[in-house]
Length: 213
Image (cartoon, rainbow, N blue to C red; front, top):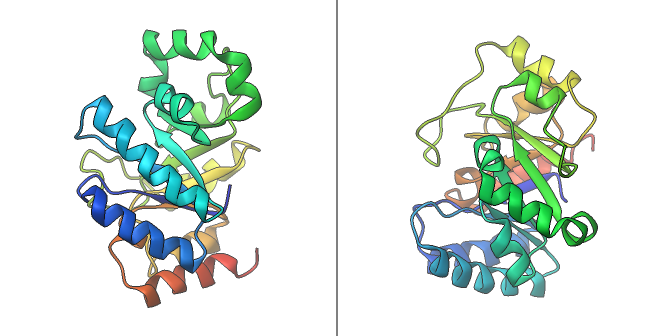
């Protein structure tokens, strides 16, 4: 996975997602998450297939949010779950059933919000997570029900809680990414900050990300 991880906004049409993703691929962003909270499973699967084809043609990788079954069915690169979704019996049963295939072939990500204990000890009774995500760092248009860190100290402390790749998430853009870099963050999951901004702003994100990496 790349250190910049682009997440599709739920308020964009598939046409706009495809157009913008094509542009982001040209700018050098190669890791994507398809996140869809509005459509039914069949539409999510169909949209994922279309997006996957574009991304694979350009040497990228696609992770599916919420639905490991879709990731496996269409041959995506991985899936991402929130802790609450991971706890659902249907998801745990699916992961157990396809465990060998998943362990060997798929990227597995878990959202931890600001739960430091979860970052320190993510549930790995079924599988090991390849990366964790923490946040939200800033207010965003992508998620309304966010939990912001109570202090900069917590933002810094969480970095010490795991040796796994740790993605910062939530409202990150070309103006505030530098603050996270200074704290020690090296991986950034970004939605509106790349999908709703202009090329020069996205290039600035890429430039700041590359500095010191």
